[in-house]
Image 1 (cartoon, rainbow, N blue to C red):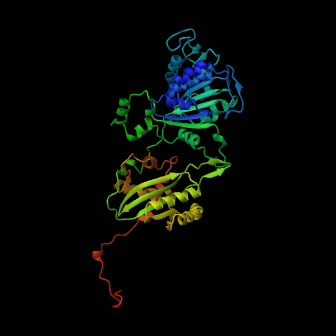
Image 2 (tube, helix red, strand yellow; image 1 turned 90 degrees about the horizontal axis):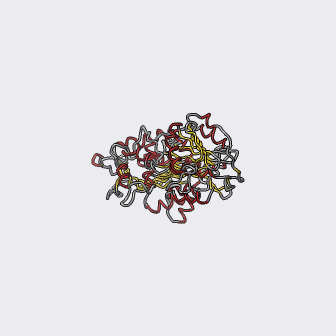
Image 3 (cartoon, rainbow, N blue to C red; image 1 turned 180 degrees about the horizontal axis):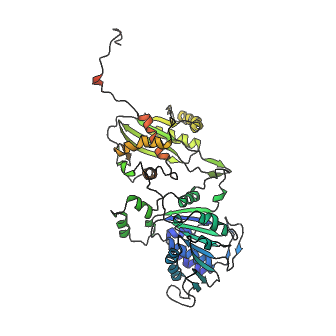
Length: 467
């Protein structure tokens, strides 16, 4: 492949596409909004791969592999017709025909032969770009793939990758690019999360499977060539639901399938009322703690969560939520730091082995910062998490009793994070740790309010003490 072609491809990319291009990962997972330029980038990637004479050794490839005409590059869409409609004209336009000069190809193009019925283009390198559909899986079987692009992977069966394509990459340690707009929490989401967090295998405890994976997330607005006026029109289209906008333009994996909670039921307020006649509650839901193994971080997908809530009789005002993959000491420090910000706050921690794990560092930090609060154990009371969350949050949110305090600046990240969980609940592929931590407020905030005017006069038993 010529250096001139590399320069030309690099110059044809906007910053978001360039970030994908510059990655050295062998497997790239790209979740992007509509019109970000996924297909344009894929076409350039296919052309470059088909012009290469060898796959070089690198951090995720054990050695270099000379490429032959059998080592094709593949573009796979959910159907063959869709693949031809999307990619065929784009490849023709970007690669051009050998011997035909134009403004895009002053020295002539790269295509020397083609067959639209079978779906392939042959370039001057002697290697082919194949266009295929995942609806015909047997036509995807082959050996020695150098690169495979799976476009709109969310609309394919996961076996397309697991059983057919991934084994075909083994001969030359070929590469794969997954691109698409999210379709809720499905196999594309699992792949995106795996490439992002590289979680350990539940059986072996290692995460070697994710070596060479990297994920990318872009919104439609990350394409600088799109009209801002048109983007604003789409974002504010009254005929489109918020979930549709978040999925199609913001590339959010929100499934929007909640039968019990709606993000619209949670009230967003600019600040706390001047007088809140209740308690400041800090509720903590603990997840598996971050570990260090030979200097490498191994992350658990679930997060530990700290919720700060001001209560005023039946109303809750959620002031802040901290969440993350923390170790035991970092979790304890975050709890004590939070308690220092809110004098008089009560602390509730999910009871169990994880609470025991942070007990010692929590006591240590309380002594160090001279802030002592006795943790109140929070219990499941033999109720399933689903029931705890529904009982605690559904009725309150529907009656407008749960308020999320965003402050006077930009809306904090935790609000969107919590609302995604509300919209997805109880999708088994979605997280609900924030909802669970918020539901614990119900245990701590339960109180009985009595009108003192209805109480009888106390009987004085001792004239001296008046008691």
